[in-house]
Length: 307
Image (cartoon, rainbow, N blue to C red; front, side, top):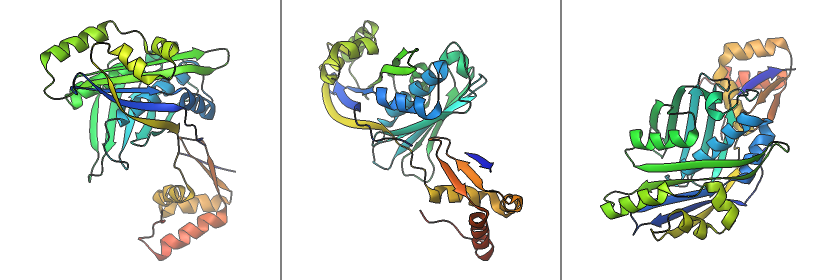
């Protein structure tokens, strides 16, 4: 969150497809996310490897969200590295809503790996418990699909295969195609299914080539991906960029600063702007607004802003 003194759209063409294969021994998830990627690029004014990195992270977050069970569940994926981007934060919920940002949106590098450098991947799943489930491990390569595969193997002990791909028009600075898959073995998968899955994955065409060939015929895409494993689609969920920031949530950010910091802001006598990291929306506070928050804090130590 940026504080200084002086949004997402309703796109429904992107999809998350949940399926099963191999006599219900394999979970298969596929997503198409061109529109979300282009919206993120526009909101954050990204180019080159920075645009590619955020787009891949958003796809990764949606793939991770496919493992959530309840509508209120959501997942946060954070990458912190020593590369020029410094890191990425993305979130996604079970309903297909996602958002994200780079810590340094002006960073540049030749590849996503170089942009992120070495560092740590943290995946936090809020599934309605008192504390979220958190998995943390070193980045494998900085190529986000590889790191997600490693996360499932190390933190959740689930054999997985993840791929994330983009086709990017550099001249127009826009994504032409974007998608990915997450394939996981379910418990007690028989050996012959495992062997067939390994054979299919060893020769599968790229995600982009499948999307070019079959467009939005997701059943044919998945059947081409796993030709010998009898894929059956379970559900299709629209995916969209969505930031749920609000005035009441920004009020809470200011409240968390405490009386000393709020008094310092008030003493300057200037309007204050708080900028949402995710969507770059500005929230303006006059000195009178800051004074009102301070008065409520001073009269009620337990004061919080209602949602």
